[in-house]
Length: 147
Image (cartoon, rainbow, N blue to C red; front, side, top):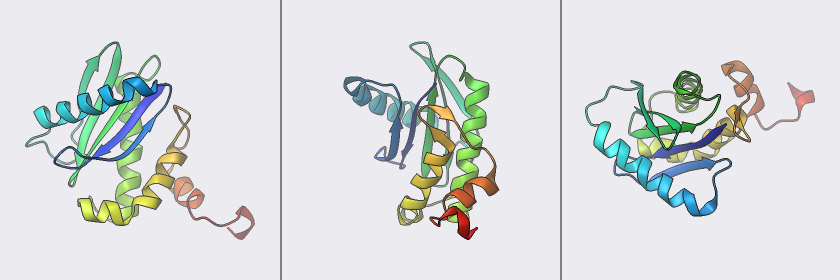
């Protein structure tokens, strides 16, 4: 299961978060842990270079895209290899929506569409859509008959 997808800015403020199967009392721990992990390790990392960590029997794959850090946390069948596929789809969708690796301002300007993409990619803790064209079609906000 994909436990969390978290986007943060360069100073560690959470921009978007999606938790699945994580109790509310543990979410604060995960937020602070992921932000600290990024602060310690993402300095000087190139765009979309993947880093991997393991914590409490779960896997974490994270990267930086423009001014935004992206963290994906999974367990069981979502090991580091599966999570690298998930984060690849997410970074591709964000770049597609923004037109380039986003600054924080551009990310926040496109916040709604990014959230729609994220909802189409990860559904209830599982990877649902990986095809860029399908994701683009699903977030158009038009009834299916108008495609």
